[in-house]
Length: 198
Ligand SMILES: CC(C)(COP(=O)(O)OP(=O)(O)OC[C@H]1O[C@@H](n2cnc3c(N)ncnc32)[C@H](O)[C@@H]1OP(=O)(O)O)[C@@H](O)C(=O)NCCC(=O)NCCS
Image (cartoon, rainbow, N blue to C red):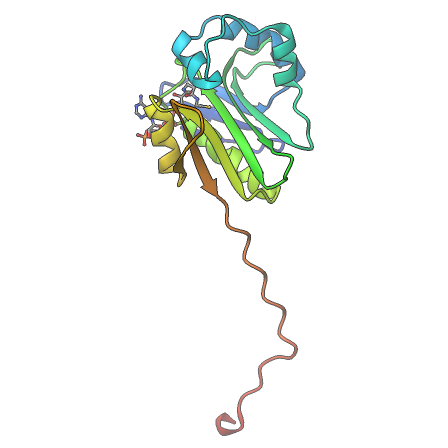
């Protein structure tokens, strides 16, 4: 997957291995209708893996909530056709929400079967982690079905570890984000050569 061009923050044009061009960008309220349409084309298993339970449809209320992230604590990216929001079909959505403690953030991702297996999942997960680092988040986590080997393999390859959860059939994948190294204070005075070296 190749990324190209200078774009606004969190915008990227990408070309997938099959030649399809997509625009990765923050989600917009206009994406609600295309997302509802795309939802009806998903496999039941994709939906269950993402939402952890079966869902027949994405209601307009749910779509509105998903497409209006709270900028103080949420971040959501879509990979969509390079068309104006509202017209563009949405092929993937990745989101992250900072918990009330300000330290942990939960991700969720869905790369539809039309565009999976070509590096989008890895790319979007890296972008979520980058955003979380910028917000000084200490841990990124997600709950994944035990049977969901693709997501577990992806998380593991990005450095996530697995933890049991209280709920049967789920594992939690967790990435610890070390705090940034403190910057060294500037030297008080330039180094002087020692007397013996003069
Ligand atoms: C899991 C998911 C996000 C992966 O997205 P993707 O775009 O296909 O992933 P990528 O192409 O970037 O692949 C990244 C890694 O995922 C793993 N992976 C992807 N597809 C896989 C498969 N079918 N079997 C095993 N591992 C797989 C591999 O480790 C792969 O790395 P590799 O290509 O170096 O082998 C996608 O399959 C998906 O959305 N699934 C349904 C929803 C879901 O499971 N969400 C997670 C819970 S919130």
